[in-house]
Image 1 (cartoon, rainbow, N blue to C red):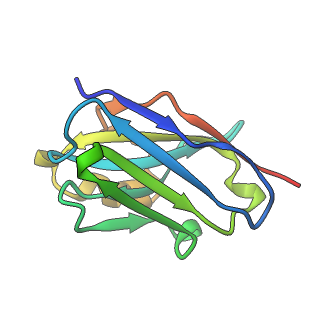
Image 2 (image 1 turned 135 degrees about the horizontal axis):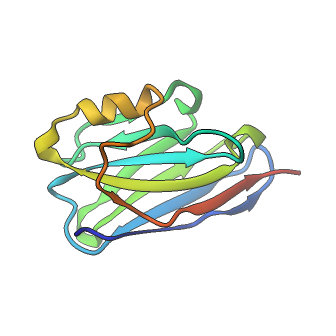
Image 3 (image 1 turned 60 degrees about the vertical axis):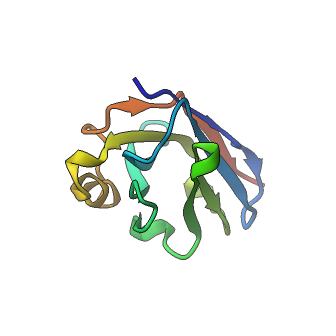
Length: 132
């Protein structure tokens, strides 16, 4: 079972930046990786997704142009660079993995507001707080 560990969260002022990391226990070459977030009192929502070959990236509308997902195969790590952060970005952020045999549909569902029900491996989450 693939294990994932997120890091990089924290407190940042509006307009600031953070880079989240999602470190895997083994190679990510066979997995599409999604980023999700859950704010207090709200349902978990998909934010971004990157394909197993890192050739395709996806973003939900509210973060397009501000967030960038990338991967470093040598480090078995996926990153979420978050710029121009807004108070509404405050949430616990999770990364999750789904095997590439499922195709790219889970990524498309993710950015359409999906909760990630199809993803099989999850990290513990990292808190991001955007506040002045």
